[in-house]
Amino acid sequence: MRIRDILRRKGDAVATVRPEATVRQLLAVLAEHNIGAAVVSPDGTSIAGIVSERDVVRRLHEHGAALLDRPVSEIMTVEVRTCGPGEAVDDLRRTMTEHRIRHLPVVEDARLVGIVSIGDVVKSNIDELVSEREHLVDYIQRAP
Image (cartoon, rainbow, N blue to C red; front, side, top):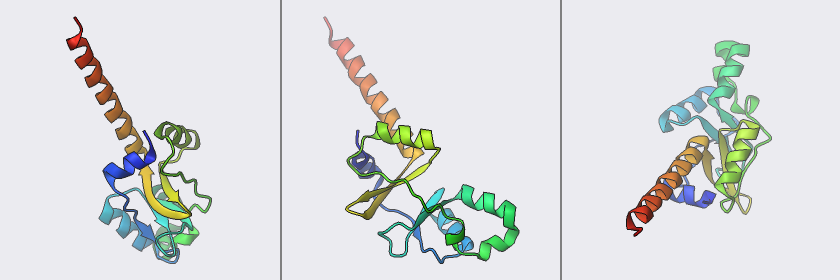
């Protein structure tokens, strides 16, 4: 299975925030879309960084409530790992596990085209296992 297969099922919408958006505005986006991370992008297609709920919690501990009015650019991860739509889901799962990453933007031709979460990867693995099980059961039932 490929990343494009996941995007085909879940869609290619990506929640983005501008680097100058406040952490308070970021939290509104995360809550509105019921997501755990947003891509930081000045234009909706390029990637300046990524910011997650964990980033907020860790910085909130350091800076207190004043953090809510600071720009997202102060807490975002700048070195963003990405993947392409043609990459194998198994490879992505390994990358996410090894680097403890829960969200990976999908990039094609230097443009943001989607995002994949660890939940999406787990769901795709479960779907594959269910499909394999169904095929095996069907095969066994047809055997003479």
